[in-house]
Length: 412
Image (cartoon, rainbow, N blue to C red; front, side, top):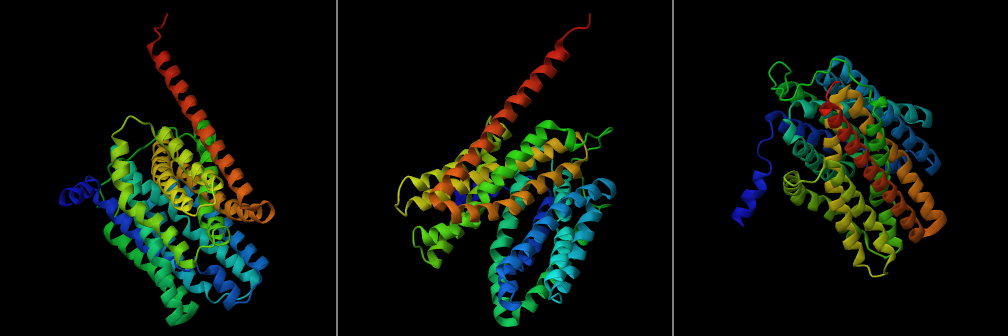
């Protein structure tokens, strides 16, 4: 057992101090955004909005995320990741506190949009910071550490949020959310002083290539958006399936969903460490992750036995553990070709679009076609994602072969 524990700890070795601090900041920030899981309840129960109005407000939430990621990428390329992260965190803290004083439908739509616009400026800047403070061979594990921190934050946030609502009301939730963002800012400016931080991979491109002109990256983004739509069903339509299709209790549903976070916490870093030492390419691993995640839906239609839900959750979790870190690492690697902020902004936007369309489309499909037909369609989307990744791998291999052939051809 001691040897197993030591081997687990060894998977975290070699990461820079700055990456560990970024993980802590991400943990504080994500645990602090505890108002998000309770937003729909707050709008319906506390402010008495209709479900239609809540839907529009959540659309403003998604739109703010898309615009914020884009603006964050542009600003990162112009003024640097450190300033963008600091401005985003600090401003988000004060905006969260102010959000509780908005009570009308119109002001909340505008307020939520502005909050998410400012909050999600942080994401592309953080990715670029992560790249700068990681040596190339550690980038995937650095991303994995950040994912662990975010997962822990998401796990702790709702639990703490529920306690705050019970003791302090929804108003207390906004105050705590704002204060934690401000605390994360203080940690950032204390430990990540740009003059003292050690930059391990500072990439300067003479004539940076626009991400919009990178055909391979655009194919990759479409594949990731499809993967995001598929993956998000586990947090929107799947809980309904557990309840209505298999009659699970809230406790049983919580155990199944909680198993996802637990498995990621225990297995993701050792798994990524092992996969990095294999001969598989990043795209090949993403492709395999897509197959596992898509398979987790199609098997649900094979039997009415409730035990299949456990297998489905296992397939999805391991698919997620493989696809997300290596897709992030691929994006970071590709970003070296041009404007890093722009590249990472588009990577974030791909998942923002998945959030905008994934939850709504899944719910509508279930309502109109039922669960079984919905799982067939979701599996088809996963298959298209896998097909795009396979095509991307072939395209990159052909491009590499042509480049090598051109370099070997003698001048006549």
